[in-house]
Amino acid sequence: MAEQGEAFFESRRIEQLSNTIFGVAMTLLAYSFPKEQLTGTAPDWHNIARNYTPHLVALLLGFLIAGLFWFSHQRRLAYAPGMSRAAVLLNLLFLLTIVVLPVTTGLYGAYSDSADVVGLYAWHLLAISLLNLVLWWMAVKASRDWHLMGGAATTSIIFVIAAVVAPFAPGAPRYIWTLGFIAPFIAGLIERRRRGA
Image (cartoon, rainbow, N blue to C red; front, side):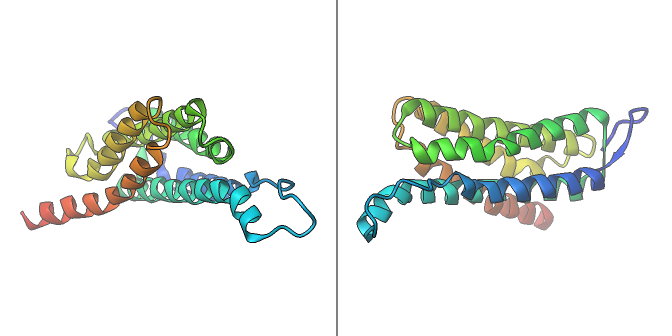
């Protein structure tokens, strides 16, 4: 919630913008698929799998990650129906990181064995998760509903680990990132326990 005396914005406007940005970004994830990499006039299953599997894995990973952050973003906007100017600007920065997601996901799909590309993708996902965590902190600080930050905090911890591991073991982050999908379940468990207490 916005502090007294600060400019106050309805989160409904940010929600409309964010739904559009998430929808376009999630659609553009498929755009990075290679169009001309198949060899021969009639490619076989082996050729198709060799050329498209890394891109398909990146597409699914990127789509699920975008969905994870969309879910968290929607919950936060529902929780905090108004926000300060600083929160609006930070939301716009968060949405910018989502706009760039198809680019880094496409790079990851094309060069998933490159330590530099995996590191770039890991740091990008970490930036998204940290911005999400800060936005949650801004939303709950007035009411001190810290338990609502459980999912965002869990995702950030997982993505920190992936970013640290990426330079040393470029194949490992893809397995670490999948742990991020437990965050909504952890958040739900924390909230149920809190309500039961």
